[in-house]
Length: 135
Length: 180
Image 1 (spheres, each protein chain N blue to C red):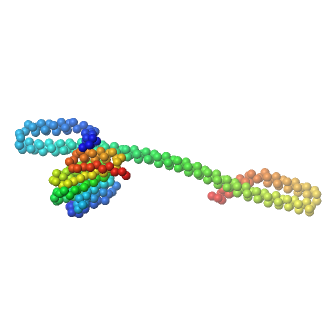
Image 2: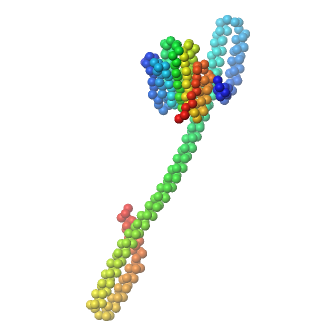
Image 3: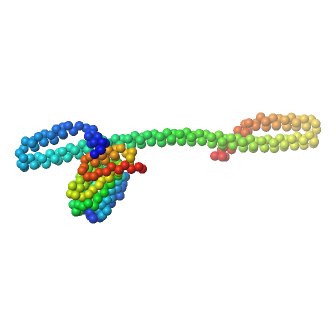
């Protein structure tokens, strides 16, 4: 998506099938939350991943902590793949020296989301914290 | 990695044996190729990609299964809630029927009371009128005529008494029509 500049915040409002996305390059805070089962995951997440890719290329890795919070209630398999790609992008950035902390938020009673978080935690080499929350 | 994460990542719902055997075969081919050769480098790259793909496939299959299970559980919960709602609706319909029956009974009893009042007043009026007529006849006519008048008066009163019930029903049905 060429019309999105990486110096500006990336904000996408949530819908019934797509999550809220708030990427703030100034405060180094990225958030994805809600439900994610878009009909066309590539169409929805393609520009988002492109934005992250461009931003990651432009910045100089530093010790300023990039906090990435994911709080999904439900996501489909293609979103699972997109998330993996997203985490791999972050992994590359982390390997370049950027300080990153991923926080996987899930409802305490939601064991499926907890297990999904554990899977990601095991698959990537970025500090990955599982945060149970009480509703 | 904590205890649960080890369990989770080790668990796979389908077998990737064939794919793992393929990866192992490439690894053995790699060993056979001379160190530093371009073929070895290319194959190494393919091997790396293949391994990554295999790892992702495992993860995604596992995650897909889990999400499907979550969806199924949510659907079951939804079906249960729907059944509960249907049961509440049935109970509500039953209560509505009972309420309607009570309302009908109440309206009927009100109509009966009104009918009785109307008929009671009418009977008193008729009785008083016949008494007055009887008295007038006794005072103004001969004894024989008076006897006949007494008989007619008695007959009229008996008629009113006998017609009381059918008249009550008639008044009640008229009232039910007018109320609606």
